[in-house]
Image (cartoon, rainbow, N blue to C red; front, side, top):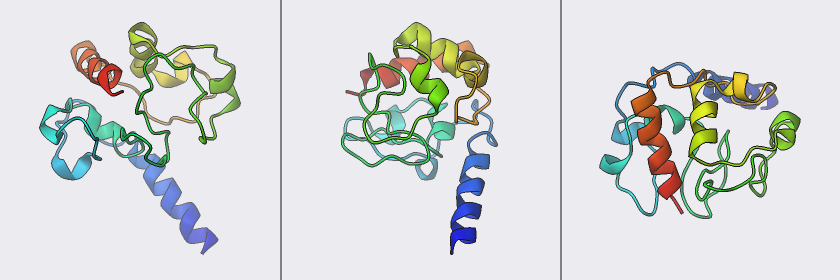
Length: 136
């Protein structure tokens, strides 16, 4: 059973970086939110949804629930086991910080647990960041 759980977690982690961020989200690739329909979500969210959710009071997935992330200190979301690097980063999730982080998470916070390679397209990043900032 432990082997199966480890393999399942590994498969999910590998999925976080396997689909191009520029590919549009589909209903099946997106987790729910309480305030936005699947059509209102930015296309780049489809890849994020493999590990994250954006639902008020929902449990975390492989990554933290991003509901209300705007303005919070990195590594400070309740009941999620962040990496020591994220906890020590001193970052606050505003638009500029999210833009830098989502461009290349491992360069922005060396030692982050996030395996996602980043979103190269600045317009798609901006659309995603604007949407995330409104989820509160």
